[in-house]
Amino acid sequence: MRDRGELLPSANPAALAALMVSALQGGAVAHRATGSRQHLVNAVQTALTHLRAFAAQR
Image (cartoon, rainbow, N blue to C red; front, side, top):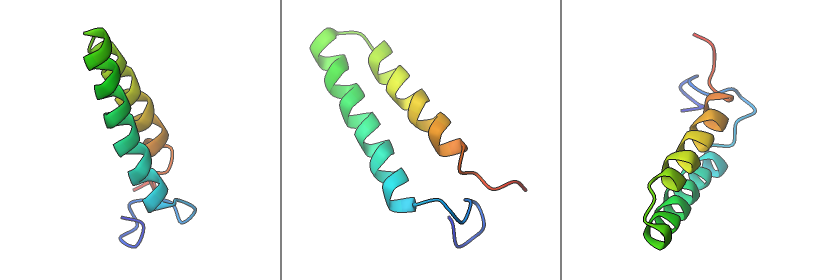
């Protein structure tokens, strides 16, 4: 995505991918432990907000 100009040059795609996986996994574990989807929703929304900060302007 960075090479295609979709992310800022300062973005670290591997770190951003790890963030998304961690948010999904952590949110899923919290959901299973508590029965509330809100933990999953909050984790993914927060990760997406961080990811959007690295989006290149088109």
